[in-house]
Length: 177
Image (cartoon, rainbow, N blue to C red):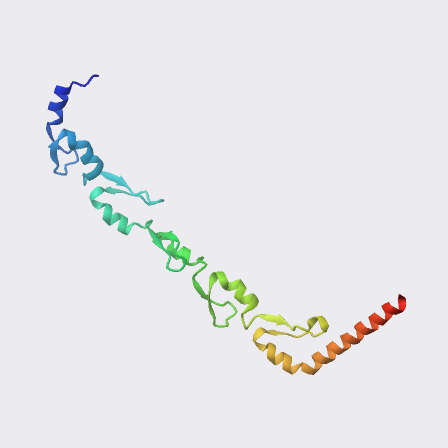
């Protein structure tokens, strides 16, 4: 078909009512933009991923404000999370504060848990620094000073014995050379 300008002009000036019964009544030439941009009775799909709801354009603001799949910022890690998944996210979020599982009463970020237990928790069981010299003491980190005071003389004795063993070994090596 070829458009005839004269007929086109007459048709575009023709006043019509919106098919969606929204009360709009204007020239046909404005109808497409009305449907694309402003008709309140047009069905829209939700913009949020995983939401399959449709709603009228007039309900857009209400839906987007209350949609279970709207994105919100996690108060701890600041990641964008779907509202409906926020509680599950908090169960895994690395920045959520938790209490030490060894009950030392320290509150730490979940991502710091392993570091805390390995290097800082006063309840972590540690070996005596003199274990290589024969001390079999294992104790909570918080009791290290107590252990060292209690076994001070035994530790000195262990080190002295090990020094003698090393000296004897050195003498045997020298004798063989």
